[in-house]
Length: 117
Image (cartoon, rainbow, N blue to C red; front, side):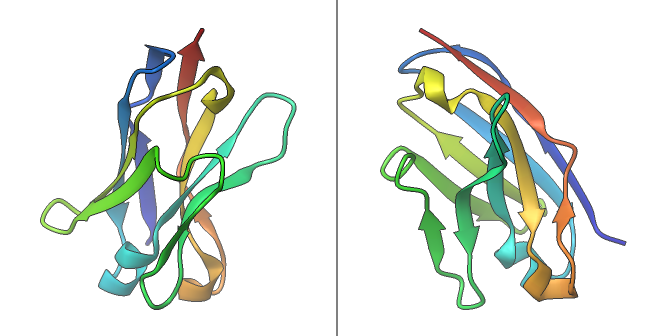
């Protein structure tokens, strides 16, 4: 049974940093495939960072150089380190196990990030 649980969201001022966590109950292949998405109010869910089957991570242009994914397999946790946050980064952030791993997408419940100007 796949389980993804996000945490670490909150309110931060512009220019600040946050680290989101995604505790994952998945296989090793799945663990290395977990990526991050976000959904701002009134907008569609969008990619923040995704990993392909070779382990290559692709970041959205809007977060490149500011956000990074790290993985701690001793804790079964994937992190999204976010720096130089901007008001436009305000969204609910979701970790995702992509469909190419188990035939369907799996999502966590999301964690709210609010960046004040």
